Image: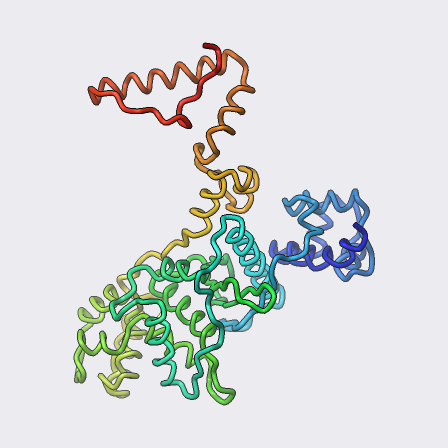
Length: 400
């Protein structure tokens, strides 16, 4: 045990503390002043080992079991890119990285728990990009590899999660735009993650996630502006050149705001991103591009465009943890801790529900059975027919 604490505890403690945005002073308060912040700093640096009592206090403060503090990570998480509109504080950056690492490690564990290994794990930095326009080819390759065709992507979050590119939502300051990372077991990539900030509109979220995907898959030359290449990748991935030309035309002297609004809904990216896309493809000139942006500035649309749509919601974590709970692979407590919310009441296996039912007082069991009987009677009266009752849905109190 002592060796485990020395080897694993410091890194795990640091990750949990930073993910919550706590300073050492904050953590002292969370554990009721049981030890000083100097002692906490020594625990985290590996210079000192906490007592069993302090370990229990720390695990309670972090909301995890003590064993979790001592367990080695199931994978190694590596960060690829960090995109931000302006400089974040070191504390903000450390918190975001800890949150993403924690989330990705959790998802890798869950993949293995439900026996859902990535059939085609994402390859990282495998598409060479020697100049910014070459990002177009990289985006086309990913679309081909994922069999997406040339149509606009209806739901980008679902598309990414189906490829084991996990979408992580971060409650971060407005200065944060996105980050990408991947997890390895041994030398193999087992999962990847792209993160974006909670609270942004759908078109900005989609472009940010596609941008981070570009960082994951492209191998950008040393003398190339990686941000510009990732922007070009995102635009090409969401709005393929062939499809844009087909719908917009190969050459335009002017476009209307109404057209931009329609294309925005069609491709799921902002009107400003579309203007840049038309300029990059040579459909409009640089001069006309600047004319359009002057119109946007005059109307106050550079920061907030009309016609914003809601952000897409990740579903992989919720549906997978519900599946794991239903199959009895994780406990309800584990599932709700990971999800950060209560599970539907019927996610436990039928035998588990029966055992819990039998632990109830006899009067409570009779009350539940009476309620079930009334619901079934009401159903029969409304439908006029009997339907089979699944063995896991109706609970027998064993009194017959």
